[in-house]
Structures are given as C-alpha cells and as structure tokens.
Length: 444
Image (tube, rainbow, N blue to C red):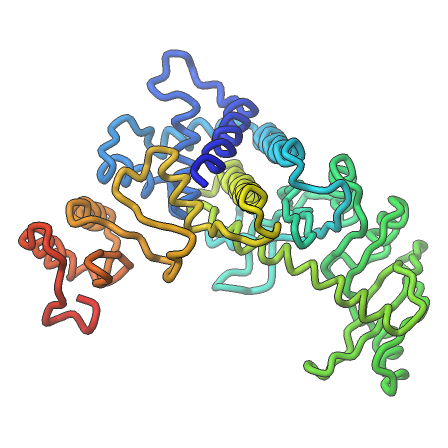
C-alpha cells in the first residue's frame, strides 16, 4: 500500500508543481514546493493553513515552514483564471495517469451536479452566490462538476467554479460534456432537477447523448399526474416550451410505494414496456455516487476564513485532486491484490495517514491497518509522543480526551481543563500504561 500511495502521490505532486508557476523569485527563502506542501497538509488535516503551520513548527520541530501569510501572498497575486486552468490540467493528468494503468474503460456513465460550499463572510463579495438557507447561511461558493459514476469507476473529470456572472446551465453542461467526451465515450448523462430546462435538454440532444433527470412538476405535469392517478407507472411524449424554443422528451412517471408519491423523470431513453420504467429509475440511482464523492471531497477540503476567491477556489480544486488520488489508490490496490474493483479498502483516514507520512509530517509512531478501523477518530500515540501532542493542543487551544485501549492512548477533542492532568500523569507514569482516574467518567 505504501508503494502505491507513494508512486501516485509523487506523480500528483510532480503534476501540481509542474503545471502551476507562482513566479517565486530565485532568491526566495521558500520554494514553490514548500508552499504546496503546507496547502496539502491543511487539506489532509481538514484544517486551516495557520493550524497546519503551528503543527509543523511546534509538534514536528520543523523550523523552515512558510507562514500562511506568505502562502496567501503568493496565491492572491495570481490571476484566478490562470490558477483554475493549471489545476484543471492537474486533474486531466491524473486521469491520464489512471488511463495509462488501464484502470478505466473507454465508456462510462457520467453525472453532472452543483456543489455548494457555505460562506459566512461579508455579502458584498462579488463571487458569492445565493442558495437555500442551510447551516446558518444563505450564501455559498458554487462549483459544477462532472463525474464518472460507474460501479467500479468513480472519478471527477472536471470542476468549474461558478460566479454570479457565470454562463447559464446549458452552456455549463455543454462545456462539461465536451470536456468529458475527450476522455471517455459517454453512455448517458445523469442530471439533477436543477438542470431541467429546454436549453439543457436541447444541448443534450445536439450532442446526441442519452440522459435522465427529474422533471419539475409544473402545473401541466401536475395535471397529467392527477389525471392518471389510477396508474402506478406510465410514460408519454411531452413537449416543454420556453418562449419560442421547445424540447420534446419522454415524461416518465413512477409511483413509489414507500414514499407514497409520484416521481417524474425526463429522458430520451426508449421506453416500450412498463419494466423499462423500473430499469431507467434504477439506472438513475447511480447519480448518488456523485453525492458520495461530494462527502469525500469535504474530507480533503482545507478550512479558511479568507474572502480571497483564488484561495478558496484553489482549496476546492485541491480537494478534487486528492479525491481522485484516493480513488486511484483504491483501484490500484484492488487490482494488485485481486479484489473486486470498486471496493474501498483504503479509507480516507488511512489515506491521510499515509500522505502525512509521505510528506514527512507524521514522525510519531502511528499504527493503522485496513483491518483496524474501529473508530474514525482513532490515532495511536506512544507515551513519549503524548507530551508533544498535548503541548500542541495547548498552544493551538484545542481540546482532547484520552481513552485506555490495550495500553495505548488515543486522543479526541474534549475539555481543556483536563490537559494539565493528562500531561502530568503521562510524565509521572514513566512509560507505564495510563489507568482511569477519579474524574474520568469512563474516559480519564
């Protein structure tokens, strides 16, 4: 596993460093690679560049670490369109890396979706967009992505940052599909209901692609569903109009016994029998693969409060690159060990530990295997390293908790008042396993 991750990560870092030129002077104290390593550290830790810099300096005793201000300075002075173009080339190179190893087939189903990253800053930022109120905000940054969603093939082919001045959905869909068709033969396209429009459907028809998307229940469709309430599943030809433009498709209606609701779909798949409706509805379930991918991307998304659009866009694109990297490692591991492709044997937690080790971040003794994945938060430390970790927690104002598990200590966020006792007990025990204390409530 180490060899697989090492080879792929080396190729990824080489592509990242080769594509992006931050124009750092030859007499600069830090090289471009040093800045990228700090960004990758923040992404792997799912934390801010500030916290990652403190960890590297205090816990890992690394002195020559660029400050976040230096990293932000070099990124902010770059044109965001140039950075976007270079990051897209890195994503392309990662796909070519997989294609070179024959990890993907030539044909695949793809899904297009919009990802929303919540924004909590000032609303006069020209790059933020409105969204449904969620998690305490009604503003966000948006990104459109196109992913391969086959069972044994998951991959993000392209990501496009969106702004209030971005083109309409039809242009975005056309741009994403034109890019995807350069690399794979698109069998069909799965879209969210947000793309249900005459223009988008006409783009799909012009590209001669099959598609499935939920149909928004306008007044006319609601009346159709009401008039056929005695039928469980059916379809009919439907023409949707918008001004002088129109689009004709198969309107598919399926009744869900569990939800007690009719679901409507727009598709150009050929439908002859009722069982075809079941097959098409089941096919659309593949789109949930892109939702799973969105959750994994969040595991590799660095945290920041900056209003700089270039930095936020860079962080998101790096999370996409690391997500693809994680998928490639799993595919290579499964092929090497004769395991069914698509089985995620390397979790994101294990992936992060190996990346940290490769970047020379994890200098403490970390034990983690595929079979030992009981807790997502589980990280093992020796008694010698617990003092270093507690000091780091104190200086960065985090909170921890410890639990006894087979003479090992593992840390979680907890109450800051316990830090002093943890540190003093770790010193006094002198390499003896920690035992529960009177204030533990089962933990200490």
